Length: 181
Image (tube, rainbow, N blue to C red):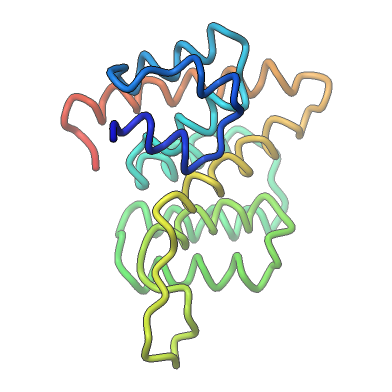
C-alpha cells in the first residue's frame, strides 16, 4: 500500500478526496491535487499525516508564534517546543500530560497533544503495560491546532488556513528529500 493511500485511510479523507488520489502520487502531488480541487480540509489532513512528526509540531509552533496566545496556549506551545528541540520521553510525556489535564479544550492543549501523541505510551506512568498511540494521532492534533489557529480570525478562516498549509508544503518537500522522518 502506498504511503499516500495509507495516510488517506488513516485520516479518514472524504470519498471525493480519496477518489482524486492515486497510489503512485508523491505526497507533494497528492496534497497539491486536493488543494487544487478545493478539498482544503482533506489536503490539511493528508499533509499533516505525511509530514514527519517533528516537522508537523515544528510547523504548528511556527504558525503559533504569530498568534495572540493566552497563558495556557503559550504553556502548551512551550512544552511542544521543548519536545521539538529535545524529542525525548520526558518532554513528550510532559506535553501529553498537559494536553490530557486540559481536556483538549484549548489551542495550547492541542499544540501539546501533537508532541505528546508522537510516541511513547498513553498509559499512566505507573502502568507497566505500554499503550502506544496510533501513528496518526500527531496528525489529528495538528489538524485540530491548525483549524483553531485559523479560526482565531473567523472571517479569514479559509485564507489563514491556506497560508498555514502553504508553509508546510516546503516542509513536506524537505522531508521527501531525505531531511526528515
